[in-house]
Amino acid sequence: MTITEVLVLLGSGFAVGFINTVAGGATVISLASLMVLGLPFTVANATHRVAALFQTVASTGSFIRLKALHPRTGVKLGIPVLLGSVPGAWLAVVIDDTSFERVAAVALLFMLFAMVVKPGVWLSGKLTTPKMEPKWWQYFLFFGIGFYGGMIYIGIGYVLLAGLVLGTGFDLLRANALKAFIVMLYVPATLILFIMADLIHWQYALMLSVGQAAGALLAIRVSFKGGNEFIRWFMVVFILITLGELFQLTNIREWIAGV
Image (cartoon, rainbow, N blue to C red; front, side, top):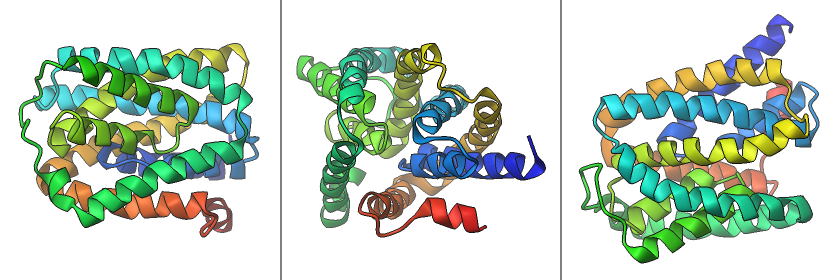
């Protein structure tokens, strides 16, 4: 790899790791970076998931050390997400990219509306401890979230946070910790399919992974200092950026290519 490739992957990976750990929606940056470096979309889509796994492993370890995550609760909520991601990934094979973008855009618009119009809903989480016992209907909720994540990776961080904050009552700090753990559980299941199809550029994947893990570790420190209000506004900004990409109002790929 050239120095330029290394710098692009480390820099974009760091940004993605930071943003996705605090909020979500930064997948467009890693995809754009990989495509600027010459990878077709299918290979870029598979390659960035390796870095996502490294990022969530790094952030999960930090959240456990900070006592913001109860792994048993994460497993209980993560299993239905994992089960839902399998049929979602299967459906992804037969649905076109335009349909993906429409579904993701609708989900993000609803979430943005709730965060701006009724911010108290996001800041009034009652569960400030990382432990809870899921109710039966929450398993169905997280199965549906897993289906979305398996089918459309874009925006999965926001959808998971919505389920954890609005569906279970966790505050944003604990919800972020659970989000990282749950993604860590379900990404390997979908990653296996891409490995079997030989769609991963391993050199790019590992370099991107270093950047994302580093960004995730810094994000955890910042989010604990900034609190729930900081996380909410961070999410609003990057939901808007993600929607700009989906509606083609902005073009991160062209911007990265021009840097």
